[in-house]
Length: 354
Image (cartoon, rainbow, N blue to C red; front, top):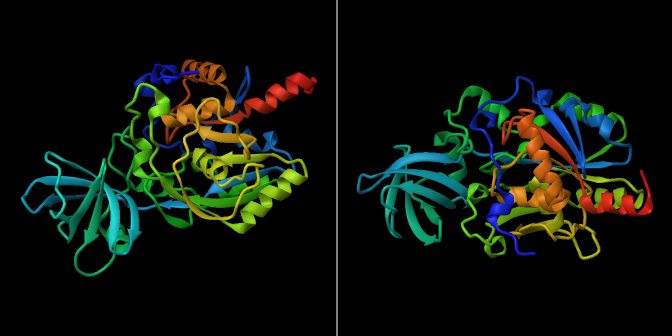
């Protein structure tokens, strides 16, 4: 089946794009999508949808202050969005400027430090730090929180806390794994108390996550690469969950992509570090994840393609139309969905299971 961008388009009224988080982390709505069945719930209802022996897998990346402003040595203004801090002296970044800097050019950022443009590879620049310090401390001291482009206000104090999961541990992301923003400590404790397991992995979400798909035929799109780490304990927990018949529930598309990228052909997850540019579209055969907790995604985006692959294109179209009609809140600060894997539902239908 030849799929195009138009297959993943939908009308979204601008007022449904959430500009601020809900008053409480767990105060969002939750749409449970199981094939043709759609149930309107609150996120606090999630524990009732989980069973002892299930396993939730969270992405514990931490968002860094990745947006920096400055000027080129020629005087032109620049906005730098760090994609990845490679090491203490080097970073990959996207740059906005009236005229893009060339390799060898210098930029002074935050009127505090200089960087040299070492190279350019398509939309990303390699930057080298001049002088003392390292990129980690420079970003923390002089950068600002990289709110998504569809959030129109400048970062506020509430964003510093709420655009970060409560379990964030490993700095490196320039966008939050937003499905996890709905959890607070009390909800996590409640879930674990009923016998549901919790495991963590790390995928540092890059600025490229907001890159639009610029080709009409989606199979021609090339995903940006992101680095990940799967601890041995997480790989073991997934294996044990499968052995006892529990369900692996990915919290967010970043956890989903990491688990599928780290999977062997037989569905076993390999522990270790790696890079992934996995592009999941309808027709993909999932190896690991049984259920997915996720937010509502942008039209014509790779993440909408991923959830369509997981839950079924027609079911996602219907779910999004339902969400618009019911005035759900969309994107990073918006409401959530719990999606059932289409293959499992088809198998239940074939066997007559309920």
